Image 1 (cartoon, helix red, strand yellow):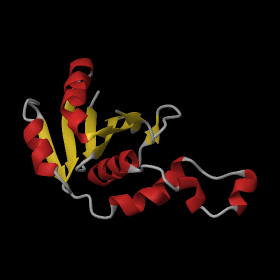
Image 2 (cartoon, one colour):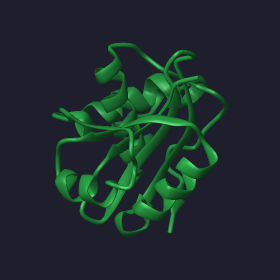
Image 3 (tube, one colour):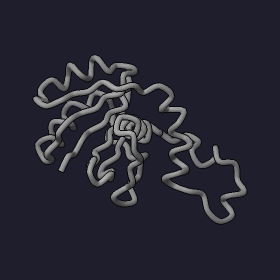
Length: 145
């Protein structure tokens, strides 16, 4: 099994994905305060066999890489250009609108939602050059505070 962690870094919050590359499945998708990231990743590495960490090259990526130096395997910095913008479209691929909701403007469904975990998913999909599916009905808006 080849599990990876992908992080969409930010100053105040980060999106994080735990996925299995060979199965093309996402097992965890969360948003957490940036100050909690190091401990969360340490715990995740203790519980899972992680082969690599992929970090988007945007805001605070260098600082996050420094904090995760305890990870003795591969840490990759990867392009994350336009992932936040693209996350809106990917949201509707993952959670399609149905029924009468189809008549409402799409922005109503993502208004005030944090899409950082979906941005992390896009970073992973761009890096692997393939789409991933959800292992279960994950809530990409989950905050760990």
